[in-house]
Image (cartoon, rainbow, N blue to C red; front, side, top):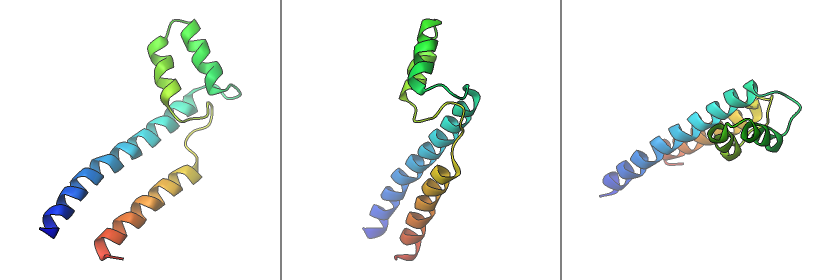
Length: 93
């Protein structure tokens, strides 16, 4: 029974971690392509004004800083958490 519960838990956790990692990478790539020196709010307003409401809505929901890609600290913090939680589950620590 314990192995079944562990299997279900890992089956749920794996896709969630992959989704979070994908969001982190996508936010970094998107932020890097935006002009530096403007805020996210200004960029969203500019996109809405130009008629790109779908892109503006997507950008508004993302956690990013225009002109700056994903920071190493953010990536390291995320990947450190992933590896720490994975090793704890694997070795029972």
